[in-house]
Image (cartoon, rainbow, N blue to C red):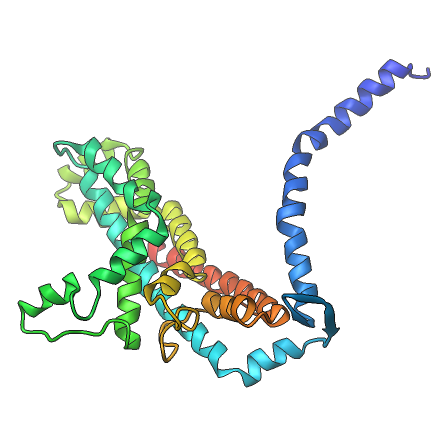
Length: 306
């Protein structure tokens, strides 16, 4: 028996309506996610000036060859990026676990402290960087003033590689630790108290309960926070850019001692207007970020399992 028009319309409506409901996401992703990625890949194969798009020339993988084999500044920026990733990601996770554990206990004013944890995250990154640049100032910085109590001399935090990385890492850790701490805190509150009561009866101390019960049960959240922190720290831009404002801002210091890969991309694309070269940097940085994030996932999963 042939179906009527209304029956056919209802049949097609049942089949196609789910795709219609999810289509806005794919449209938005295509416009703001997929198209820029494809466009960047196309531009990376060209010698193209940002202010002279009509004069673009196709050079194939010339930009990639120059980056990977003939550009020491690029590898310097990648080394700085990996160094800052290690100095920021690991302390963030460890401090966040400790803070979440303290806030999960019975304390007076717990809600006040929990709300305070998110304040650094919603603060403007420009304001945070400018304030920390003053705190780590060579002549009148608060950090050097405190170090002088212990007989330390005036440290020029912007001049050295290790010192500048430490200062920038302090900014990032201060700004994002509270965010991860709230994620861990919410997960800790979902752990049944009966597990801790049973562990107490078995003679387990508080520190043993934390490492044997809390941390293993937080494995999904720890992995999530590690991956999120990794992807964010691998593309640091505002902190190193504003840490030393002036003529050397885009180069990350006079000797490029704290120039990250994202900052090198900014220098090539918006200071030298080499749009093709900066696009190649962007794609290599994206691939490197995925590789490092995958490595972080595997290492974190292995540690939390053990």
